Image (tube, rainbow, N blue to C red; front, side, top):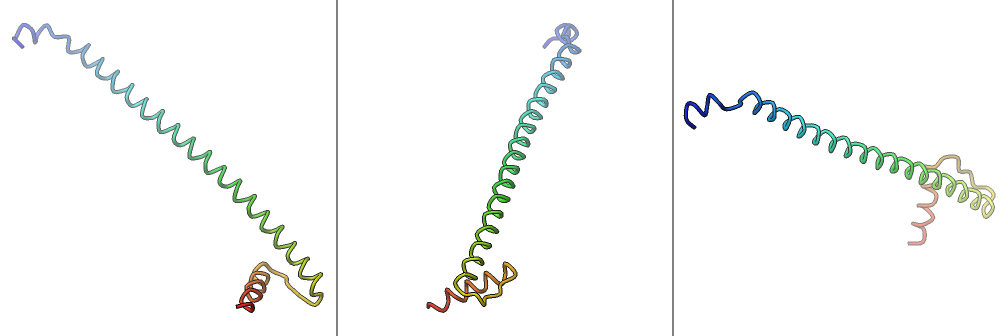
Length: 96
């Protein structure tokens, strides 16, 4: 560029446009980050719901197993999940 072209160059407008472009780019990245964060939150919420449902099913199954075992073997005394798990594991290992 010549000296006259440099003097005539609209430097202020150039930097204003440059700044607008950077702001637009930053907003785009922020929007993408917000969308990804929302998707992660939804997946996390869904996973928590599924975990809760699975835990409820497991507790119901354990209660049914204890009831069944008490009907088959009236003298059985199982009070905790750990006792039930150990008892079932012991039953399974006896068959080996």
